Length: 329
Image (cartoon, rainbow, N blue to C red; front, side):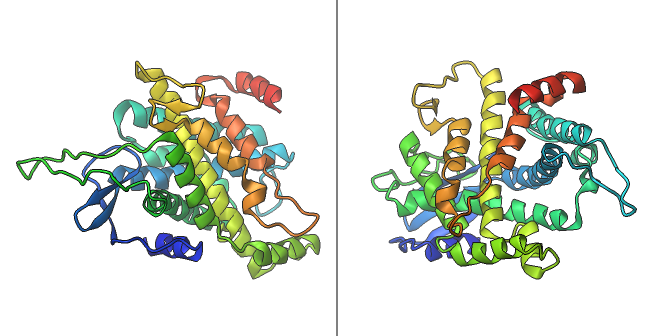
């Protein structure tokens, strides 16, 4: 997690008054959590988080690329310039695989055959630099988790919280963990976004915009851009992770009795809804990214990808999904 702590420090994060340790959680729930203990703070990641994020990064990048091409009226081509698949069919199938991963995980706590889902999504159609982007997206999602929890520490949310009490016998994995308020969760999201994206994005974006304007596409700088190793790529990864929270909320709300959304977009009184968190981060894009004068960051592609997910293609025929997509456009 050195990337996470380095990002937080470069964003002028004050050093905590006590050490922060990262470790694997004994729990199987998706996500990360921070707790206070006698010598500092402990940030726990479940193994499920690593596993699901890796599969999700593959499916999210694939479906986003498919949706982007479809929205632009473009077709994935082979080496001879021949169409490989109908653009809408690729978007439809990749989102079906993505949503199947969520529904299966929520129902069973695991994914029986992740390779089959990757094949269904047509991961093989990705351009070479987007294969590298998958790995970058996976790592950046984990960074966002870590930075969010570091945000709770840095912003003083842990002050006054009871220290972790481990139950006896020692084999027990029951812990007393505090539940921050929805407002604290929003602030921790903002902290994570600012740290992950960076606070001095202007020079990097000026170079990228100049190369794109001059159509100098065959350059190391633009390769880095397409592969997700820029501030824009890190921002997109955060948005995709927050969209995962939105989708999880939808599936859990369908299954769990007593789960309610309030007027302030809370879920169960402790966390904002995933939709609220995604839209909040999406709305700050042009504030986070210091674009050159007369330029704005085009946020439409990530919203179109998100909207296609809302079509719930896994539950509909391709004809029904197409009709709903036309309504969303």
